[in-house]
Length: 159
Image (tube, rainbow, N blue to C red; front, side):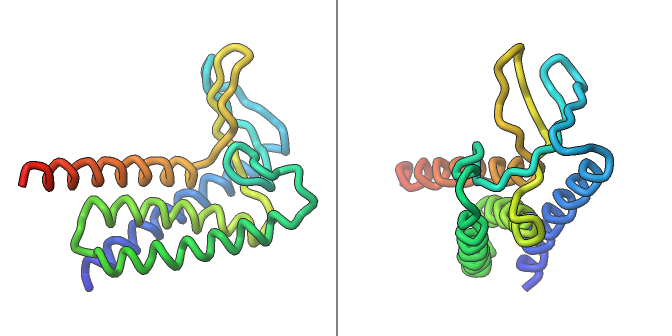
């Protein structure tokens, strides 16, 4: 049981961090406003009704329900996997980070039918799509899942 508290506590910390940063940005900026912090990084407030890289952002509104249902389903499956694999440390950390990020973005979708994005990396006229803290944790979690799979594969090959 203590491990479950740790994993779901980590997910809750990710959600809290994500929601606090979004609240701060929304409270200080207006939609589309950009604040250059370096030559390659800016804060920019964007409400993205689509998924990653604004996938389906231009759809007629049905995507809000679609992405909400997908996120809810993912949260249930990930929670089940955490409970089932709670003793697998790297796997559980990865899932906790993904769960926290997914729920952070889910809260935006339920409240706004869009996700608040505000981190923007760019080089001259080329930019990576804006993203948020939840997206960052999801990406880190996915990377840890890959690392975990490689580690387990190496271990099984050595046996």
